[in-house]
Image (cartoon, rainbow, N blue to C red; front, side):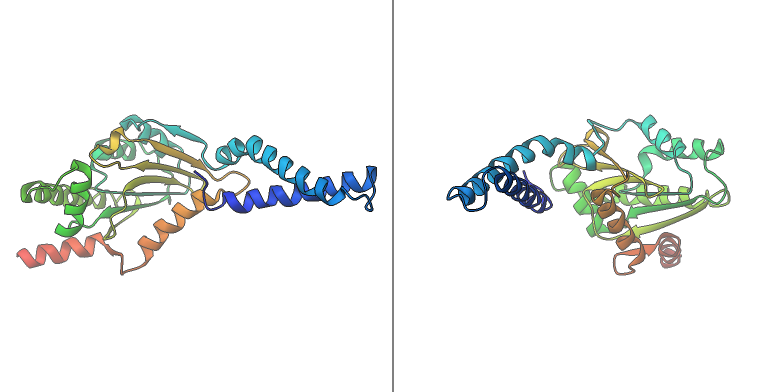
Length: 250
């Protein structure tokens, strides 16, 4: 399936082909030949089609470096080892790798001053119910929703508890995204799709690298993360949220 950017690129092939064929025809046949226009158009269409077929795989490779059938827990550790200045994560709770993350922190893997941001799903009934419905492939019951809310609260508290050793912030977002992602220094992205009725650990992962062309697909995901992070309409500071919740139950 063509992406929105495929049509402009295909048009670019066509324009290049017209210029190239027109140059050849002008040099070898002459502009006054009655078949010049037909040859230019026909040749351009054929050349554009050939270029599109040949270059299409390279266009995809330019944006997607690799695709993993699934992401193992140990793969998360390797991602963190590659962080230099900044790391960001978006997901449901981050609970699946909490233990590994804590061990990584204890080992001093992150550089001093490294900025870490966790964007977790807001532990509110409506957001969590939508997430669980997608994960289970059916309508969740109230206990399943409540258990997920407790899980998100608990893992958020755990991440916030590591701030003494890290420059770490946590926010809750209210706009459920059907993917999770690691972002490393704005130069790498690991995008894990959450397919309906499946666990996120068993779903495919796209690996995106910035490269010399400043990968527009990676840039899209980074901008989407920042949109959710900075706009108070879509997210809220987790520490403030949890403090208000504790005060309401006091």
